[in-house]
Image (cartoon, rainbow, N blue to C red; front, top):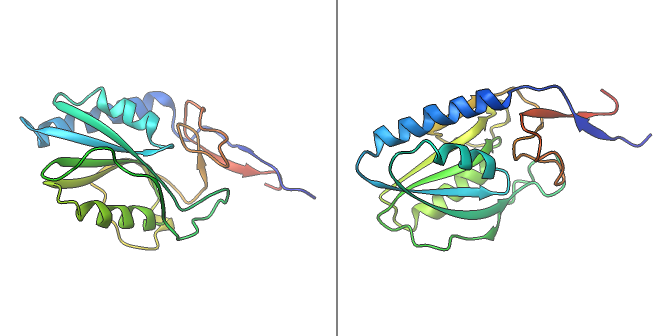
Length: 179
């Protein structure tokens, strides 16, 4: 039997995501009052979350993007981090917030944080839509967390499985045909 996948039930709806983005945007505004902030969106999954967050930051905000992968077409992280697209702007002496879709194993973000720290930012923080502590394989401090979730393979709201399900307007999980 060939295993197929589909999206499961709605775990977090669009309204809850938007409300949490507003709260985090206001928190960033308070913490960096009077300063500029560079949001670094991690492609492709973080694009929807970044677009919600940025609407609620009342500061001078700049954006750039990186593409980093450790999954490929699998449901498990390979543990090997690959930078596909690097930053276009220097980050030395800047307040940088990495905006990620999900923190799972922590391997990709730990690598990315160390990599960017070497470029001398004034401040380097992490903002994630989803935090999955059960999947951790390395310690990583996350400064802004949208939602903490259970140990499932998550899809929707920018998160994908093999490039599918990114366009769901909510957070769901991948369900196999034998479930």
